[in-house]
Length: 530
Image (tube, rainbow, N blue to C red; front, top):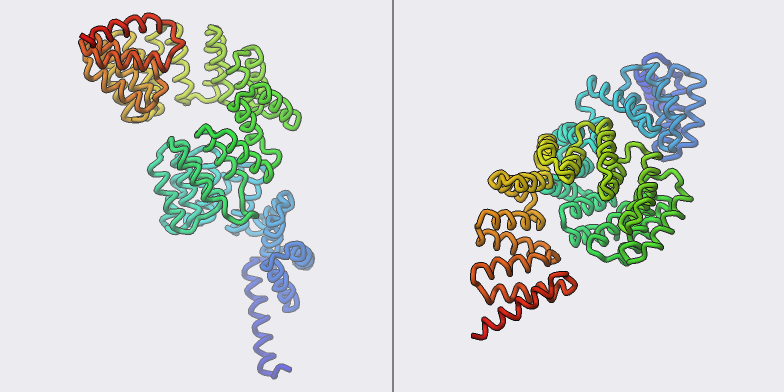
């Protein structure tokens, strides 16, 4: 039994709660009994009993239809149960009752995003920031939404502002790493991921993102290790994205069987994931079974008949098997189902190019420019097309446009160098190759081109260094051994020439000129015996 004094204290507490709720709602008064009922609903919500909370909140609202906070928590209960349409309706009511209710506006934006009304969601989030510039949830949401849309530049200011307010926010560091990865700023991305790890980020999404970035930076073995590090997390937290990235890393290591196992594990957690289905077909093709890959894609398309990704991957197999008509049909289907599926534009144009249907390829790129007018890749491909048509000046213009839009576009610099070299402008060509190698020092292709340039300039020693570097980076450039043999032979370095020509014969026994090389090798052997 409570004493009279205790009863008086309890009564005062109830009155204070009722007064507080009145102030929160802005326009509703709750009796002491109603405040007790509302407190019970909050306990239900806080304990995760969302269905019970919904019933209780509906009763509170029936008696107090202008009670903003009840609408807010009812919306939150629907939100937690992923009942997006109901959550939207309730949050809109809360905002209508109290337009300055920051949390209701914020949650309404998140709900609209879930309902794929992304532009409206972003607009509301921007409005929230205007009134509450330091709202950390909004800053995080804007950063996350822009990263998901591939808009790294738009995401970064929000994430950096959030990190000034919450420097130990692991998720913000993770998102910043993803944004920097989109810009191919690998070192900065890795530093951001390290911060995320330092502040406790251990989610599957973290390991998947770090593995994806590591792979993109050209470190497939490290990407495998990162993905494997994330696998011991509790099974209920495993994200199919992590297994997907593990599969990609294995594929980059040419470990097709291991990749297949990883992709199959991803499918266990997400049985209808289109991108995983697409990559399994690539595994079958990598294992030397194009027919199985084609049949797999056709079967997957029965499950996803409108999948641009699957049609695209089917087109890839057809193109690699030189079944060009089938490839064209598949790429076209990809564009029918998603007119903004950019890779299909590139690959379809490439097939047209291979068939010397230059007009069709150019029309396709021009159509793509209407959608992506500032895409450096499109200008780069138009440059390649113009070069192959023999219009070097036009190619130079396109390459320079691509570089203007993307100053760190290493491959565009490489092809710019090729174009200048074809015109005999060796100094400009050299400058372009050097810039390409500054941006991508692991490009064997550019070192090979640089070697040819030095040969043209009569600088054999520099040519040899460039060719050696190309072979170091990519030993499959076996033709370089013949080129090195030719340089050494011209310089009178017979033993070195003999060694290079012999290596060439061993590595390329099917080469059409191998019989002539064999005759030359016999002569060189005779010379060395003297």
